[in-house]
Image (tube, rainbow, N blue to C red; front, side, top):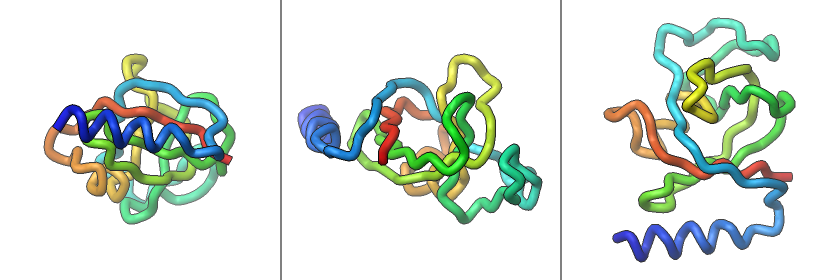
Length: 115
């Protein structure tokens, strides 16, 4: 399993559209934030593929890769956070579900900033 995850991570790193890459911990937004205004002015929608990041511009697309098995999703930055300094990105519930992290709540990920 580790070999497969490593191979998937290597293959995903071959994308020519990657601007930068960062490893860290992802978390996701609770349902109570659904329909609340984000820092970009959009309403948070649990079914959309969005994320909060401290510094990246709104509209920036990110590829979030699960480090243990290589599953990935593409999200768009539309909010600021996470406010827990040990985490590098907060994901929408849809993105978290596709990554299989709803039960544990946090996950080791690679965040690729893409064109």
